[in-house]
Length: 284
Picture 1 (cartoon, one colour):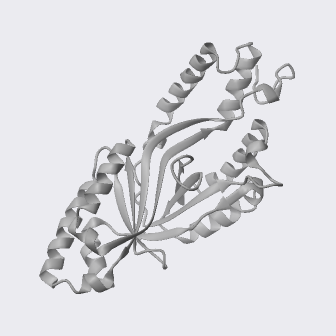
Picture 2 (cartoon, helix red, strand yellow; picture 1 turned 180 degrees about the vertical axis):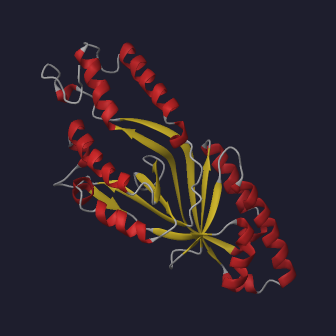
């Protein structure tokens, strides 16, 4: 039996509207501005000690086996640095955030923004097939049998997709981060579309991204209930022009053109811990 479409005996309106999702690494973006006037007033020898302490801490975070961190120097007025953390849990994010706050360098850093989310893989196609199959077998939504079979599907998917759920931070030189929503306006509302229609549009949207797979690495994180937008998008590449080309092309597909809302964009250049001293001295 093929489940690519809903059988006529299964009423679409009786299927759950919420797609299944898989969650992985906890993610924190910290955007910061250097208080340059105060920093330049610090004696050179003391500055070296402060940077050495911070570089050692950040280098350990870059190599952390349970989740990495990476520093990028921001372009534009939104800050000087963006520090990206991937960890196993929110508790670990809290510890790394406090660790950075307790560094002496933190006295010369001013937070400008932050973003909290969790790596998310949406299972639109799998959800539609699974919901339809269960309904066709007469299994009531959210019953014990339904929930058990849903969990079995999720467990199989978690195992197969674990590398995508808990990824390393890509080693590329440039980052582009932005938050986004799906529209909930008076005329167009993503959340009122049928599951099959949302699945169709997301499939077309994803096909564009696949054409850029060799040039850019994309990591989507969910932030509903965690931050001000619904998703965070991280793009990593060695040529920043690919950010413009990919996002511009996506503007023309239906899901973006009709339903997407975007927050502020942050673009940065990788600044390894070993180059922190150079960044602060050159910029200061």
